[in-house]
Length: 384
Ligand code: GDP
Ligand code: MN
Image 1: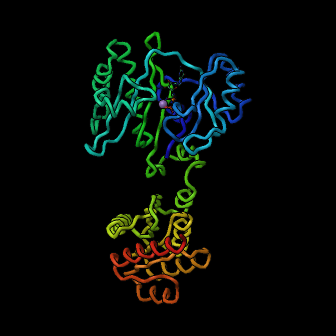
Image 2 (image 1 turned 30 degrees about the vertical axis):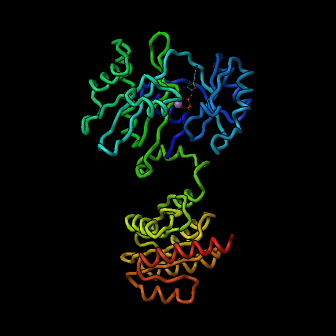
Image 3 (image 1 turned 135 degrees about the horizontal axis):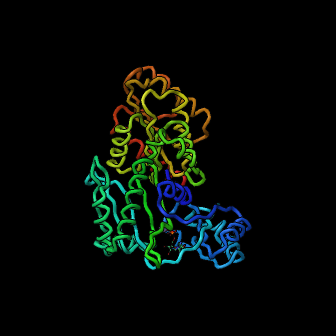
């Protein structure tokens, strides 16, 4: 789950990282009021979940409250990479001499938490990572002791912050960001830019925190910050129904029980030349209501040209799943072909229930995947 910049900023402030104050506005008049209150040049920033807002015109400076209102009216309602800006952060504009990048991430390859920094921060950091990766310095936090002071100072020196006072401030910010990463169960915590001001002091102008969804159950305070406005509707519905669902770009909807089996199903669909429209795990012991919700979610994707059910009944009972499919089909108006491979507990009963349905039966996963791929092709051709 992504947090908005202003939410991440408030967390940074709580951990002692110097941030810029300011408020959130949803109308140009509010932008003006906040700018008047701040009484200085301000920066007006779109609060949307996309990287590169600055480059897309979503971050603008204003010298006066009147100009802030004008800039606010330009940014509010603006479309940035498909998302409409509904909120802006209005903050005091800071003058700086350099922009630093600072980030904490999980490096899956080395299975370590990496703290990275670069003296070439700012909106071009992705370009820097591509063309000049040596400009990004990294340290791996100790697996049990965390980011050690000497590591944070080494990182400071590596990016050219050799002044003692500055290196100490950088080290304390890096340690705080590492602490935020750990304590919020983040998958990413980043400050970009962390600016160096004329007097040498450091200040965070933009921060980003992505919280691991699987850890949200122990962070009700963070969960309460969720903004579902740009979460795809299907993913929102799946979350509420307790279904693990990830939308993909293909055209074969997959309904599977168990994450491993769901992955295998996608592989086999690919093997036979198909392309999965989603990853979906209805979970063990999924009953009628969950199956129905899952089918509705799959069919809400207009790309779907065939659905493949791959259910292995262990705890899950195949007849329960069959009832779910029947209940869903009664309510969902669709002509999308569906292939069912249902085996395991109560499979005879389950198959009997589906005998008179429109489902195309398959007895193995390979057969099911091939039939789904063929059905999707035929369906697409019939619509062309
Ligand atoms: P992003 O593009 O979504 O990462 O948005 P940022 O908040 O990082 O802003 C992008 C760029 O706008 C920064 O790299 C700065 O160059 C500039 N910027 C942001 N805030 C300020 C500010 O307070 N003062 C000045 N002078 N520039 C700012
Ligand atoms: Mn930024």
